[in-house]
Length: 307
Image 1: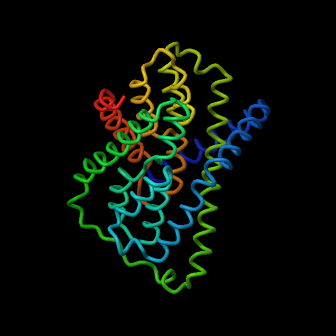
Image 2: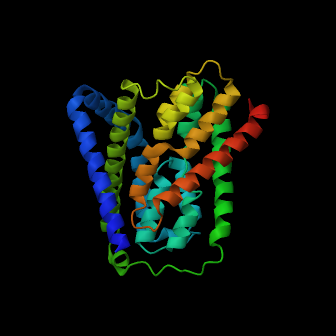
Image 3: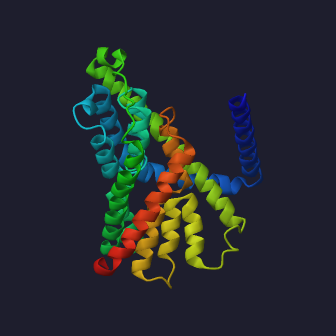
């Protein structure tokens, strides 16, 4: 009965939030259209070409059972590092759906397999926003070291659990290579469509809050930038790069925190990919918070010798 009431309450809250968003889109159509245009442009110019090949290849390898040949933790971590958010969550969700890993293993893996990509951190943030390759390298190194340390810490909580995954479904084993490749393509576009929806939604929310002056009450610019980064990491890093009173080292540290947190947009995308994997929203948010703290501390320790 409690589960039913909780689910009913969640549906009511979600419905109310959706209705409020629709009302705001009707009241402020220019902001909605402008945000959608920005989100779609970002998706077409950056997200689609960067993630589509990785999504197709990762899906194909997973469907062929490649993850059974190598360690289950190596594949999602490597793909997450290479391609960035939300690839790690996508692979872990697919592995769980195919019963390649258990729920416990999914919770352990997500603690260190939810990372940004090196191209974005070094190229877009370091060189593009901060104007410093060294700052980009600092952010990337701290971000990945923080993820590894995060994974080590959370592994202690799950090392004694004996839960095992069942065998890969027969349906996958009976499909031909062309069918598997077609499924990989369709799954990739479905995932990218989900990402597009979250990008547009959070572009609209951040633009609405900015136009409504909700960030104006924060007088300290770095704190305002962190508030924006709480919702969307790209917006937050861009705002930090414009804080003229911050040193390059402190900008690198704060950008590391924002990127390791990922923002509510990335968390929403990742949770969509992890649907049915046994990873709850509170747990995932906790892993992102600890990753942000650990990566920020590492960046603070390294900034003196790297910048």
